Every structure is written in C-alpha cells, then in structure tokens.
Amino acid sequence: MTAIEAQNLVKTYVSGHFWNRKKTTALCGINLKIKEKQVFGLLGLNGAGKTTFIKTLVGLVFPTSGKVSILGKAAGHTEIRKDIAYLPEMPYFPRYLTPEEILLFYARLYELPAGSRKEKVFAALNEVGLFEKKKVQLKEFSKGMLQRVGIAQLLLNDARVFFLDEPTYGLDPLSAKQMRDIILSLKKAGKTIFLNTHQMGEIKQICDRIGILNNGRLIDEVEVKKITGSLETYFIRKVLADGK
Image 1 (cartoon, rainbow, N blue to C red):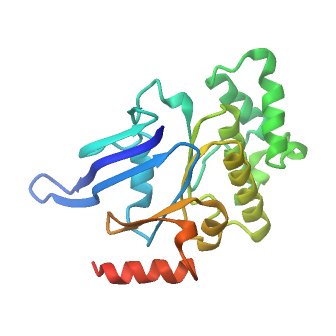
Image 2: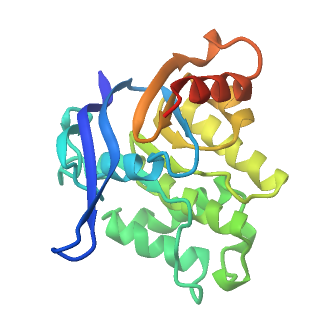
C-alpha cells in the first residue's frame, strides 16, 4: 500500500499588500509515492522547500493545487490524524511542565484508556532514555533532551506514519546517535518514516530511498543502496547539475 503520495503538488505563498503583492512558489509540481514500511529521506539546501513539503504532507499547510494523500486519505483528514505523528524541527512544550506531565496531557488528547496512560507514558520515556528525568521541569532540558521528549510524545499513539523535520539538527553526537537508534527501532517495527535532514551520514544508515529537493522541485529520487561513493558528493553533483 502507498503510505504517502503527492500528485502535481504546488504551494505558492502571497505576501505584501494587495497593491504590491509578491508570489513565492515554494513547491513546484511535486510527484512522489512512498510505500508503507519505507524510510524516505528528503535532502535539500536551505530554502529548498523541505519544511513546507512536510507541513503540507501532515495537513498543516494547504496546497495551492495538486493532491496529497496519506494511507489513501487526503492529508489533514480527521480519520488519518490518529495514524500519523509529526516532530517539528523545534518542538515546543511549556517549560514549567515535566516530561511525565506533558506526556500525560498528550495521552489524554490521544484518548488513551485512563488505566494504561501512566504505563504507556513511562514506557515511552524509558524508550527515549528519559525515565529517570520524568519529574524534572523541561526548562532544565537541553535541545537534545527536548527532542527526545518530542519523540516520546510520538511513541504514545502507535502511529503508522512518522514525519520528522531535521530530527538531529543541533544535537551533540551522543544525542544524535540516540535519535538515530530510535528511528531505526521504528523502522524495525515496520513504521513508515519521512524525514528531512542535512545530515548525509544518517541517511546512509537509516533510509531506504532519498529525494533531492531544489528550489521547490524534486530533481532526483533514488534507492540509497544504488548510490556508490559519498552521498554528499552525489547530492552536490545533482544540485549543481540542476543549475537553477
């Protein structure tokens, strides 16, 4: 089954006043299909449109034209929201709360049975290595620890499709490895994962396929195992050859 599909996806932003409007096209006719249980990595330079693309896929941004579907239903459809999980590049949580408190809040939002909420929260915190910090206020946490709280939140709902926007950006080497291990465990569990990243090394370790986005256009799509040599060299060659 196709987990994620974009058909002729276009997203244009309009800024300025009505007498001086400026249009910026962030996504230009993207076509993409990702099968279930695959890990897909989207690469691109800053400003290529990666975050706009992922927000469109999860239904936070509406297409100007074209279609986006997740597990056969339109992106943003209420019936599909329980099956997807999204981690933004900079997850925000009230800093006065503890990991236990914030996850119990999300467990209620997910309508998890009251009798099993704490068990699931503690299991998620243990999975991301934060069980011992469950009663520490988030204001004491580093960026890497906050990212792990975000991942723990995603694990609560047992989603089928995960969207991760720069999941290791700004993390120290140990935190980045822990994040990769979590993603690999999701992969092993048969989840579909779509991630944006600048980190070429993690793509080689995690992804089945990659796409390269340049100036809002998907200029390449390939299986990782078919790339010989350095992924960084491959990426740079493709972007330079695109020349736009």
